[in-house]
Image 1 (cartoon, rainbow, N blue to C red):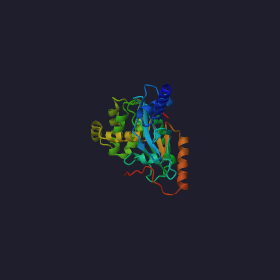
Image 2: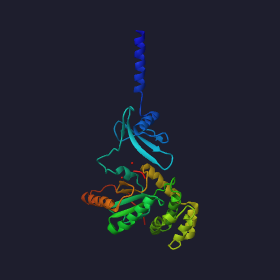
Image 3: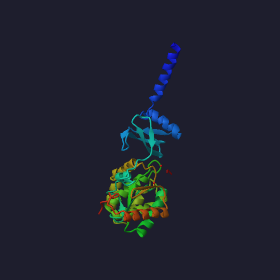
Image 4: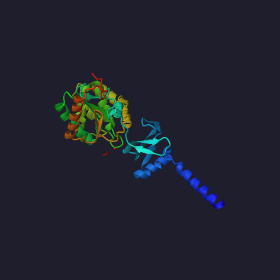
Length: 303
């Protein structure tokens, strides 16, 4: 009897220990995710505190996996309130646009923009001036949007310099913002010029080349020099970077077409198909919705 009671007690203890496992315990969740996704020891797993979610009976937990450098991926999980169940994925509300979540996070007021403010389609691009893929996407956008959709598409540019791998990307973004402050139209000349000159620019010659560019434009070069030296627009660039994290953007270029996310290089044929669909959708569904990315001015793939 004594031995039987002891065995029962041990079994009960083991059962209680197993039952006590909860995904709301961060070490437990990390161990589970490492096993599930075969995350190696060099990868860091950062787990946020649980937050209320729109999914009944579930809590929302953001998990970031990073190598400590340029690679970073954020995933949202839903955990049952008793900690026993995990759901990975997005929750959609059929009463809203399927892209409502991103649309609410996109802040485009005060950003460089080209095209009519009342356009049926707003295309927001997060880009990096030192990124080769961004250069190719910029060519696609600039060569085709105005020609094909002069009245229907508005292009909005957002800086996302990947500092870990592109040493002059952020100073170039700061300089671009300085130009934008002086002359909004000149920003697009700068945008096209710096992508074209990408292979000729270094961290050491960036400033001199920017000033050389500005000398032939309607810009005050003294004011521009002061703005660059003081990094007067750095906070504007940082706000875009912070916004990209909230949007869980992990690579450039990343585009949003009326909130629809497109990641990486998108060919003109692919992009035109998405734009045409959105224009047709707007015509067939004239019910007024919250506008995408209103501007008040004078598609997890990694590379």
